[in-house]
Image (cartoon, rainbow, N blue to C red; front, side, top):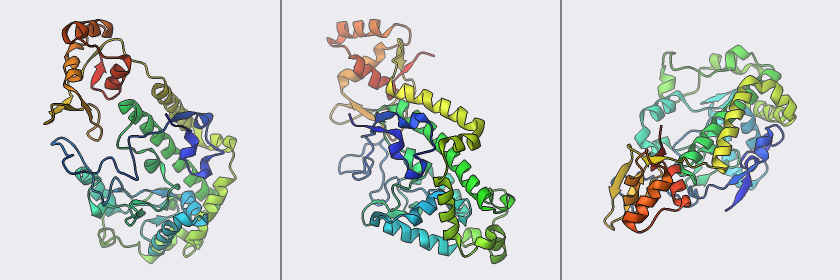
Length: 360
């Protein structure tokens, strides 16, 4: 099992400001593989229940909202590996589309399409991330990922327990991004009332929104003030400001919301690294089952992206867990009836993937 420190997942700019939890280690998610996408279909590999992604897009059908200081970090970096990503950032800034003091954001039209097309995720070339490198099938701005890209996996080693941990981390890092981006704006001195929040969905759409055009010149000038035309310098300034922060500085500005989110994240971390198997389990009544031509079973418990395949013997064991008798008693009946019983490791796996669930 490969272990790594949580902070090693994050861009360097965060290393000195985040809590002690980020010094702890956790297992590497090995089931989700970017370079050889686990969700891409192979010949004869698609079941009627399975969800597969396009090889042309993989899961990169999402426009990451990059906070201002991360944009600055990309622009300041000298690594040739992200040269293509830097070029793309330059292009977006010159276009002025989605370019605001908070950072580089997706457009209103993109957000609308994304919300209305969940079945297109992982498949639609129209929704492809602007930073995706088609020639290599990889990200052009890695490791300068935002919270969503850092924390999203199609599959998890620990099933649902893994998913809820990464969702908790997404919530926490999303808060960190908002605090730091707003801090940079405040310290640089732009008028907060004009730039804290992007245009909301309640405001009328214009032809510029439909055509992914930049705001008109007057609106752009009001937002950027003296930094209009020097947006790259602004983003670099934001990055430089965040680099000067200490952990104490960040704790003071992050407030009670950080304390709440970090306590939740710590609890999810403990559940992930020290899982506890409930003493009484039952078959998940919402379990989706498909029998294959080979006589095995595809079981989907918690996520359509992460089904597991089991033998008929294991599948037949599930009904012995009725939510009333203990796991020990259920295993005894399984041994009597089937001549074999599940190990604790197997039971834990079936529970983590919510094939079996705890009695409510």
